[in-house]
Length: 98
Image (cartoon, rainbow, N blue to C red; front, side, top):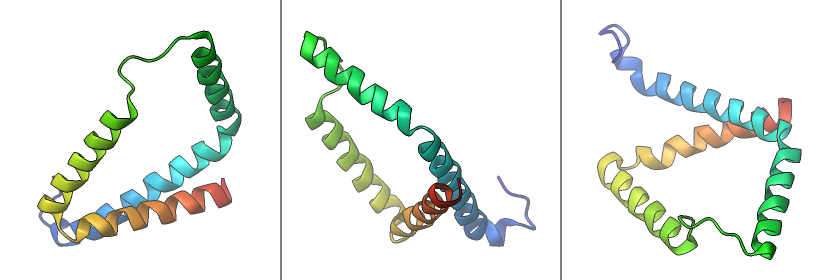
């Protein structure tokens, strides 16, 4: 996707975008604390009333996440573990500065 002049710097550009993505999500997370609390309260109230989300099952979520992680590690190798580090750095900066 990158022009030929920028292709050697593709991994550095990717890390920058990941850090920026984490930064934006950190700002959004900091600003949305009240929303998260209200969503959790609403889900608890729905559970108390007897309503549930039919497609949300914790064992299925864990299985899907593990399948995704396994396939990404096989295809990406060690870079799979590097990318979340830069995302978490951006997220932390977003929480701190946002």
